[in-house]
Length: 103
Image (cartoon, rainbow, N blue to C red; front, top):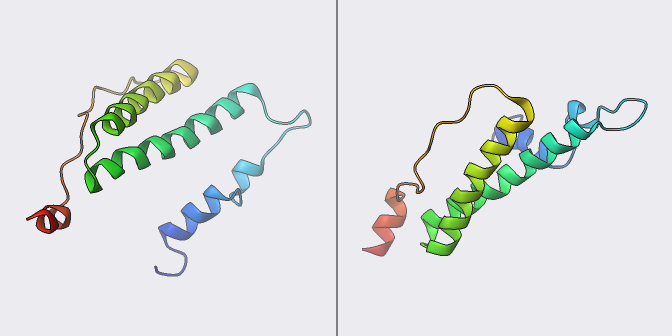
């Protein structure tokens, strides 16, 4: 890991050191701020589920992870509007190193 690289930023984000995550008004976090933070956290968890299915095939986890990803996309669209996320594949391609290990 290079010093100051993307992994360091992700570490700071995950542990609350990013200044915008510490931003609070006089009355604390607004409902929309809380909902956005929860959707972001759930998105990281859903992505982890989806990535795990590449390493170890697991149909129930695949169905949950990709279904949750799509539900979060809809929640985010309902919360902030913008452009709806178009349908995405419900699986990830197998990684070449994982394929090589199985052969």
